[in-house]
Length: 446
Image (cartoon, one colour):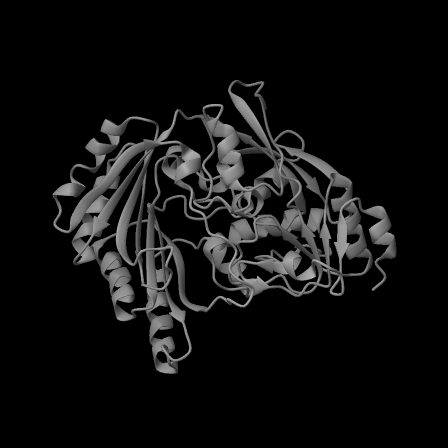
């Protein structure tokens, strides 16, 4: 592979396996990837050159922003690292309010800090180091999902490098079908080098942390009932994790986030939950939004991710049977995790066909899985867990690609309804007919 011309054309760095800094450049949350070449871009032109190089050699393009694809190392192909494209610019929206133009390599913690200083916010991921690009293109279920919807719901424009290396400005006026596809259709259509979001006024947030003990079933039922009529400023997350990570205390907990600075409003909304046995309020205080984002540093290269037996689903109804199935799954295996996040509110206001994201009728997002650790899980247990999860997923109306644990290309068929997939495939055929951008939950060109 002759990299001389690419190195001449690119202002950033081009790395191959024999180059200094290779291991650091290929490390991610999933471990050490094995790409053919890494292009650490410094400019928009660099992105175009990298895509043209890949297309000319019939190589696939792999894109990195935050690097949080925890079950998928970046192997083979041309890895385009957008890290340096991390600008965050706030401008006046002609329709009123503020627009935020964010580079494709930016991460949500940096974005939140810039916006917080201006009294603004965007519903983002939970973790500071998560990339803006991957989260948004997959939809983006964040801590403000009931207040403002998905990250993708706040997307009003984008700058995109196509499979031919050309630069396109994407808006509802210029390329409505392409912008529709970017609001949840994944990285199938090009490399987004800039995202344009409509921001929201945000004076601050209130965070409540609740301890949970005993049988989780009545607690989750009470949490469901509270959220059925709660103001949309409230989004809650239930988490039950094993004693595996020293950075994450073992056991069950509830985190409630209020979009705004009204502590008494959050206290009032949670009051019915605090009457339930096993629930205790540990903390409730006003914060600035950047301070509530989690921080998960990249693991050491030799720390490989374990297998994961389970998945996620978008539940139209969290009824008692669904609660029992989820809690039973967690109880059946010590090395397992259970997560639920409330939906509804602004998430449910968006018409189903307005974005590719599935299941706008969902009221809860649920994820459960057992860690497939050699010596702890045998074949019989794997079969039992896979069967149990399949029954849980069948209760849902769709799955969330950003929390998927498989790299199987066929998984995309489970993410989108047939009509949505057909529309995505038509957009793909227009913008990437050779399927250069196939290293994702792939939509095959129509």
